[in-house]
Image 1 (spheres, rainbow, N blue to C red):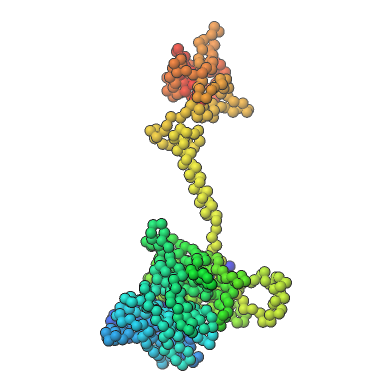
Image 2 (tube, rainbow, N blue to C red):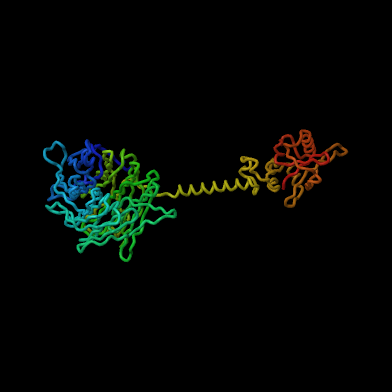
Length: 613
């Protein structure tokens, strides 16, 4: 049995808006937020949380100026000269500086390694530089989005930031400083028609990167090379449905250079879609949906997205991504986090993403709006170990809380490769063993057709019963389910005589040693044409005093109106009992239920029975 998903929480003193793990030390989580400028009692801070303990605990914290804005975006980079970790953050300058047209919104901080106690003397987090990368002078604009690419060859990284609440939306692309430098080097600014709701960046080759961003309804990509930066290319537009409405993008993340994952919120808070897109390549000009699913109905809006690769390709491009499993986390408006798994398969020169299956739903993770999600980078252990490996997932909220979940992992044994002769021969030639693949130890829930088929069968059964009931009430078919007995009389149409005759046999037949009742045999003596009825005519007493019966075709003018057994007067019922008994057609032991459904008429003082044919 797989270990459960662990959980540890801590409450800080300020609302949190962003978080990221240290790629050099995946047990360190760096968070930021605050009350903004001029709000007494709630400071603006950056906090380092040590997630290697249970419960998690704060290892370092710095309080920023209360005259400036809170931390709105954050990303953790590499170490400076192999020592302090660089942290990039979006913090607007104070109103006094902005009135002068100065807004140094891009900040760089250094976080010392091994900060494990607040009591250690000396700063643990220090600001190194501040700069402005946007050209807009809008006082309401702020640095809403910040992403940097994973470190590539020689530690090179490229980052991107995007405006929020700006009249003129922009995206700034910059080189992340390496070595002793700390300030970013601006590459280009993109003036875009609508503000980006989310963006991500990935390295595609030795000296090339690609930026993806989305607004409400469109997905764009931008190629970044040494020669320059391309114009944004629209690769996907969400289509309108029949009602004229359409979903809107909320978040996106790269899976590989070929695939992007995105969340979409349906209109009128109708739910959340999770879709994987194959980006255009070669002669293709538009992205195509490769996988998609819908989150549980309880999640009507998403607020965040995070993705983790459990078998990352080597960081030196153009290394190709092989088979791997991705873990996906989607934050919902109901303070839940929905977990999914997705498989990446490399089949020859073709890459596929398949099996987008739900893993777990973590409910009530926080007591307030979830503002950010982050997975810790996972690297398989270099040496064999019996310890269960975990993938850390962090989430923060405006309710001042930090939650860290540990998702258990297991090694994946490729039985087909290990058992084949080709696989064994390759293993002998390869020298050192390949790095083992890891997957989530908890089994994902693949969709099952059982519930669907049962629902379809139940629907057809209900429809059939409803149709049968309507036909019975309208007198268009033989009664089977008794619908005529449960509706008002005003709804019922007259029952044709042929269906009355079909109703009679169960009442008229009395099985005894496999034979029908004598009364049924008597009624069967007369062969009918379609629509005819028969009548048992009571004969007058013979000379010997015996009374008999004969079968005739019923005629209204001759035999008179028909009556049911219940409508007959007591003397008529008594007369018929005696006559049928004398003729050997009925006995006391048979009961009067044989007469139900039978129509009776009176002829010249005698009583007859008419049976609908």
